[in-house]
Length: 401
Picture 1: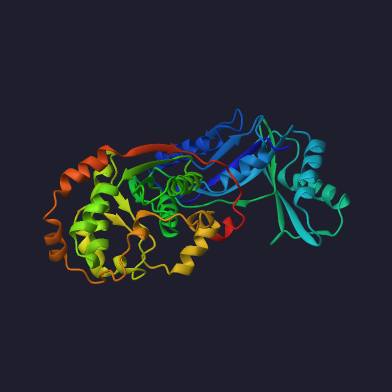
Picture 2 (picture 1 turned 30 degrees about the vertical axis):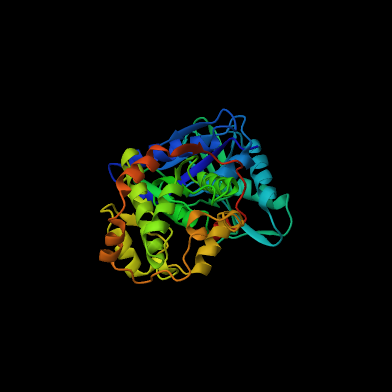
């Protein structure tokens, strides 16, 4: 029934002369998530974007559009000929699709084609009265209706819509540069990736794998998390770093209560090397202030000293329950709690230092040639390009808006 979907921009509308760049990127991202659904065409202008569905399934397109950042809202649209009887029937069908008992409605016509025989008031009256005669428990409210049927008369035909579906808002992914997401198998880092992508950042994930201490199932778990994140951008690149040798050296050389600090410093160094190779501008972590020993301000200071690259921490002021809530809504929570440990959890010391001294950890590390170990790990990194294994609806996605 639907001929097209009308996309309304969010923050893109506030942009000036570079608005075209944001619209172009949004169009590319939409094409990426819809590419397997049929012969879809997208036409974009300064104020709106139109998806011509052709043979595509409208319901599937609607579900895939919901998580795409940069969309304020969108509406499925019916196109009919410039014939008042055809317009009446289409308006009634739209109304029946969404109608509930005891609702109010109005018809809002806009006549872009001034040659059409009926003016806007006549269109509103004729369509509104036809709907009233063919429905029950429905009244007119021109000020604050439950349902607003929009009718736009143009030279090529008439477009009707009555649903306004909330979009994911934010900025189109890829309009704010690229960053490396340090993706563990836990709850926090996928949420950090999601929030960073919402601000238009294109993320590439970096995961540290330590076989035989971490299993292939732990690796698969992280791949599944990356696929979940790809729902918001179409694809996510995942770098899997062999970390066993470095982790073993740390635990043999560094005092136990400083191993966590040193481990995080080496991870950050490797993530930074991968960032440089892939033209990234920042590193993203799932750290929340004070949540664990490595996330105190003193620990962050000692760990961060290893690089001058900006570290983005979108969860820094979130508590655990808030993070869990978002993880459940973006569908990563159930994967994150699978019982396959990553290298951070299996080597956690019983009493990690909560206020480590930078000078001490530098002294402990000075007895090892970490430069060559880091270079070896970077060279041995496995890189995968992952897309969503399934594009499922987010049952609570609108709560995130």
